[in-house]
Structure formats: C-alpha cells, structure tokens
Image 1 (cartoon, rainbow, N blue to C red):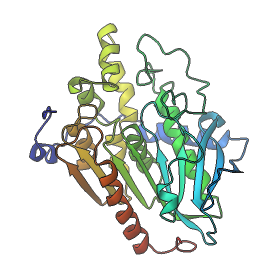
Image 2 (image 1 turned 180 degrees about the vertical axis):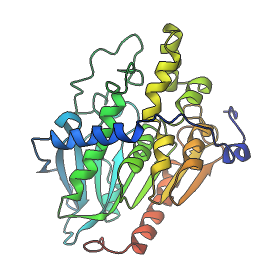
Image 3 (image 1 turned 120 degrees about the vertical axis):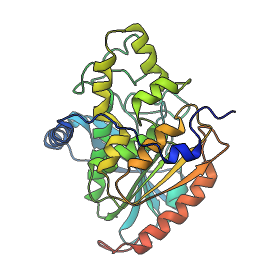
Length: 333
C-alpha cells in the first residue's frame, strides 16, 4: 500500500496544538472518584480449569464505570510464589476477551497478564462478555466512536477509560501482583486506552501502545479513509451543525492529550503505511508524551504494525524495565 500521510521526518517533527478543555483534569478526577465511590461490589477472581498445566487462569469481574461489571481474564505462571510483575492489556476495536485458554504470551514469559474485556464490543471472533448498560441506541452511525458524543458525560469512551483505570486499581490490591510493576499495553484502540490510562493513573511502571487509535481525533477524521475514524466524518456529514461541539466532546478523550500528563516509561510502535490510524496521529501522541519514551517504526507496514516483531521488542523491553526497577514487594519470577 502507498504512503498516504506525512513522511517519517515530518511525523517526528509533528506537534499539533491539541485543544485542552479548561476542566479536563477536574472532569477526570470527578469521573474516577465517582466510579471508585459507587463500587459496592469488590473485584472477583474465580479460578477456571483450562487444561493448561503451566498457566493459572482466573475469570475476573471488576466494578468499572458506575460500578458496572467488567469482565476479563487474569493469567499467571503456575507455581509462582512471589508477587509478579503484571501486563494489563486492552483490546482493539470490536474485539472481546475471547476464550480462557488464549493469549498466553505474557504468562509464558513469567508475568501476570490481565486481559480486559471491552464493554459492548466483542462482535468479532474474539467474543466479549461485558455489557454496556448505558450504551443506548447506536444512533445514525454504526459503531462506538460517536455513541453519546453529544456530551463528555454521556460519551462511550468515558465509560471505557474508567473501566480500564478500575482494572488497574483492582490489580494493585492483589497479593500476587507487585503494584510497582504494572505495565499497560494494547494495539489500536487498546493502545489508545493504554495511553489514556498512562495519563490518568500515577505510578505505572510502563506503557506499550502499538499503532494507537484515539489520538488527534480531528486529523484522524479528516485524513483516514477507513473505519473507525470515518465514523466521525460520517456523523458530521449527517449533522452539519455539530462539528465544533463534537470535537469539543472528543477533546476530553484524546489519548494524545492525556499522554501529555503521563510520566511512566513508554515503548511505542507506529506503522508508516497505516491507513486506519495514520502515523501522524500516532506521532501526535508520541511527540507529546511526557515521560521517557522510545518508538519502533515499521516503514512498510499497515495497521498490522510490527505484530510478532513488536512482541519480541516488548518482551525484551519489559524484562529490562522490571530489572531496573526497585522492588515494591518482591521481584517477578
């Protein structure tokens, strides 16, 4: 596929001025405080039998936004006796948590691994188990990117980002997890969620966003030719008088903006032929990221990005990161 965006040199210099709501920090502080205060139920971790002898798996339910249940899988190496470093993974658009025996990379490497389900999604082969009670009707544009977009209070990603923060909260209270060694990661939508969490949760050990979505919404809607960014353009094609109000809502959820509040070390990956998350939108987040950072660029790949090659980079990066951190409770196995 051809290059359709800025050159790599121009991407590295690309630092757009993103709109910052005056009450951005207050909005998120209130949102997260409300979620934490209304969670009547504690997180549950129920062991499940998968037939895998070297990996322990737990069916997880965490009270997320408004205390609503969010599902997930927690996997860890069998026989681990010390608190583990943990990788929290958020999923791409349309994906759900899948089956209990899948996604074994991080547990096989000796870490705990929480895979968070995505509320209302999971219509792909990787099915989901988390409802979105506040979702309402999808509206005139299919998908989730414009659901509730009339207001930051009702926007879908307010609920989803809160779910992600609450999953990190839940892990910090688990005796099997070293709370100082939690890394968040994800591909595409999952990468955007990881960036948002990095700006909303202090004290993370690291962040690994791959070809991150949800960055620089306006540019994505203007230049991307494939969904999901096209959902915004389609919505505004139908609602010609809502352009400014739509982007005002989206500014509260721009992962590139929230990343300017992050301090944890980050390893990004960006693909230069990505026509779903154009590289300039990803570099908006990378260039503005406030913590220590590095990036792997895949010059001739589309939205698949680095795939297994990037996983190899991540395994080495996490091992080095955790080896250099002071131990909170104990080292990972």
